[in-house]
Image (cartoon, rainbow, N blue to C red; front, side, top):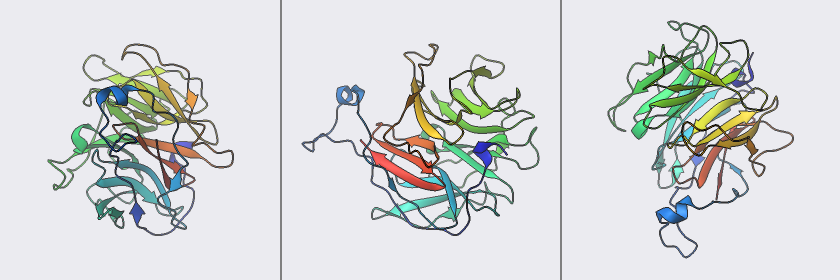
Length: 281
């Protein structure tokens, strides 16, 4: 089975604790736009925010205000479901399965779209053109239920189509697919293109993309084991730079994947061997 759909271990839920992403200067004052444009430096030492025995927790994404987290939860014998947790007094409660989005088969590889009211995910449920297909669900606001998911025919294929990262108000996407025979990254411009286009990066088995909203920074996992990388470009139509490893987050003896980055760029979530970690800068 492909790396980006494999399971790692088994078990039950947990409580999560995250810090709110509230950018501030060292003197405690607010960060202005010029400071946010400056290089942010390295992340601090990552720490686990989930470490539940016998449970696989991946693909964690936070709302922009960091008061709701959605992620994939499963075991080696139970397929992934999509779950959520909300914050009370700084502590995240236990995960609750989102029933509208979850079935008895695989659901996961989640990414928020615009306004945190659109969710993209992959599933092998019946009704799509391939094994893993790309779905979208929406909600009117945070208090509303998610709608019944719809398969995205423009992005899905007869192969395996995985994590779908939107940017530019959900008009552009980067996603993973093996439709042309091997796992690769594809980009799709929903306003101008008829079909997605594969693009090459010098990484083995690139997967789990995450795009910043300006479409200029792309975080991916690469390598057979799994390490985190970032690619950049100066403009949407410009080529991507060579991948830069996030060396402070990667380890020699574990698999890292599934980046989520806050809008300020200061708070990162990622998965390490089936647990969710966070770091700040």
